[in-house]
Image (cartoon, rainbow, N blue to C red; front, side):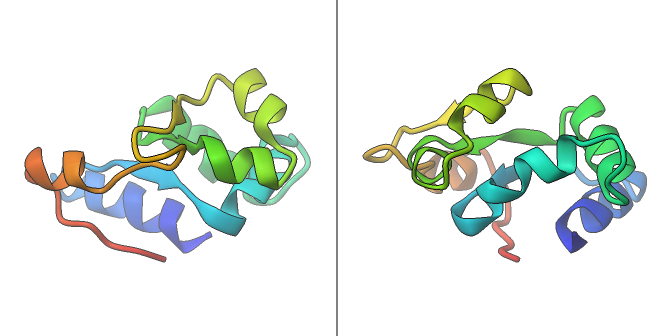
Length: 99
Protein backbone atom coordinates (compact mmCIF):
# COMPACT_ATOMS: atom_id res chain seq x y z
CA UNK A 1 0.00 0.00 0.00
CA UNK A 2 1.83 3.06 -1.31
CA UNK A 3 0.03 5.43 1.02
CA UNK A 4 1.67 3.74 4.02
CA UNK A 5 5.14 3.82 2.45
CA UNK A 6 4.76 7.46 1.45
CA UNK A 7 3.44 8.49 4.86
CA UNK A 8 6.42 6.91 6.60
CA UNK A 9 8.87 8.43 4.09
CA UNK A 10 7.34 11.90 4.28
CA UNK A 11 7.35 11.79 8.08
CA UNK A 12 11.03 10.80 8.04
CA UNK A 13 11.65 13.90 5.90
CA UNK A 14 9.90 16.18 8.40
CA UNK A 15 6.37 16.40 7.00
CA UNK A 16 3.25 16.32 9.18
CA UNK A 17 1.28 13.37 7.82
CA UNK A 18 -2.34 12.23 8.12
CA UNK A 19 -3.97 9.26 6.41
CA UNK A 20 -7.72 9.06 5.85
CA UNK A 21 -8.88 5.59 4.85
CA UNK A 22 -11.70 6.11 2.37
CA UNK A 23 -13.72 4.28 -0.28
CA UNK A 24 -12.77 0.74 -1.27
CA UNK A 25 -9.62 0.94 0.89
CA UNK A 26 -11.85 0.56 3.96
CA UNK A 27 -12.32 -3.07 2.93
CA UNK A 28 -8.60 -3.70 3.56
CA UNK A 29 -8.72 -3.09 7.33
CA UNK A 30 -9.22 -6.75 8.24
CA UNK A 31 -6.33 -7.79 6.00
CA UNK A 32 -3.98 -5.06 7.23
CA UNK A 33 -4.72 -5.91 10.86
CA UNK A 34 -3.87 -9.60 10.32
CA UNK A 35 -0.45 -10.46 11.76
CA UNK A 36 0.44 -12.70 8.80
CA UNK A 37 -0.27 -10.06 6.16
CA UNK A 38 2.90 -8.75 4.43
CA UNK A 39 1.62 -5.16 4.87
CA UNK A 40 0.78 -5.56 8.56
CA UNK A 41 4.12 -4.15 9.74
CA UNK A 42 3.69 -0.99 7.63
CA UNK A 43 0.10 -0.59 8.85
CA UNK A 44 1.11 -1.13 12.49
CA UNK A 45 3.97 1.37 12.14
CA UNK A 46 1.73 4.05 10.59
CA UNK A 47 -0.99 3.38 13.16
CA UNK A 48 1.52 3.47 16.03
CA UNK A 49 2.85 6.82 14.84
CA UNK A 50 -0.76 8.08 14.69
CA UNK A 51 -0.59 8.87 10.97
CA UNK A 52 -3.99 7.26 10.43
CA UNK A 53 -6.39 10.08 11.25
CA UNK A 54 -9.38 7.81 10.75
CA UNK A 55 -11.62 5.87 8.43
CA UNK A 56 -14.75 6.84 6.54
CA UNK A 57 -17.75 5.76 8.59
CA UNK A 58 -20.11 5.43 5.60
CA UNK A 59 -17.63 3.52 3.43
CA UNK A 60 -16.55 1.13 6.17
CA UNK A 61 -20.21 0.46 6.91
CA UNK A 62 -20.92 -0.19 3.21
CA UNK A 63 -17.86 -2.45 2.88
CA UNK A 64 -18.77 -4.40 6.03
CA UNK A 65 -15.69 -3.37 8.02
CA UNK A 66 -17.20 -0.88 10.47
CA UNK A 67 -16.93 -3.26 13.44
CA UNK A 68 -13.34 -4.16 12.49
CA UNK A 69 -12.45 -0.45 12.25
CA UNK A 70 -13.92 0.11 15.70
CA UNK A 71 -12.05 -2.94 17.06
CA UNK A 72 -8.83 -1.50 15.59
CA UNK A 73 -9.48 1.74 17.46
CA UNK A 74 -9.71 3.79 14.28
CA UNK A 75 -11.56 7.09 14.54
CA UNK A 76 -14.74 7.04 12.45
CA UNK A 77 -14.78 10.15 10.27
CA UNK A 78 -18.23 11.35 9.29
CA UNK A 79 -18.36 15.15 9.38
CA UNK A 80 -19.64 15.42 5.78
CA UNK A 81 -22.89 13.44 5.51
CA UNK A 82 -21.25 10.32 6.93
CA UNK A 83 -17.98 10.76 5.01
CA UNK A 84 -14.76 12.59 5.96
CA UNK A 85 -14.73 16.10 4.55
CA UNK A 86 -11.56 17.63 3.12
CA UNK A 87 -12.26 21.20 4.24
CA UNK A 88 -10.93 20.68 7.77
CA UNK A 89 -7.62 19.40 6.44
CA UNK A 90 -7.28 22.36 4.04
CA UNK A 91 -8.13 24.75 6.88
CA UNK A 92 -5.38 23.12 8.98
CA UNK A 93 -2.88 23.73 6.16
CA UNK A 94 -2.60 20.20 4.82
CA UNK A 95 -2.03 19.47 1.14
CA UNK A 96 -4.42 16.72 0.08
CA UNK A 97 -2.93 13.83 -1.88
CA UNK A 98 -5.09 10.95 -3.04
CA UNK A 99 -4.05 7.39 -3.84
